[in-house]
Image (cartoon, rainbow, N blue to C red):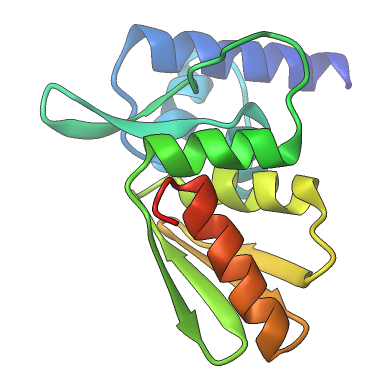
Length: 156
């Protein structure tokens, strides 16, 4: 990892620990105050790579560092299990897509964990702010993926 990226991500961790950051735009402004010039795409990648989640602090949804059981590397499926268990998520079907609706700012970490899990039935995923679209290979795969996600969320 390049030095600037390490410094920027350390600054992001410090910022979300120190003060409420509600949006990526607020995060970009806070980083500018610390001398980092970044694009929205870079911030979005950093949020996903750091696994930031949205939590409620003083009545507002703000970015937070994910709870870590251990600092060691965690598998994609373990990370996915933790995220789906800790965050409210609605899991439903739409054609050959599994749609996961969650808190604003939480879709990227879920999609990143799912991609890291490398489930063979998953063709790919796209994450917005609060929604993940998971494309699967066929109808049977759709049911398997949905069942697994519900199970990881503690609902199945």
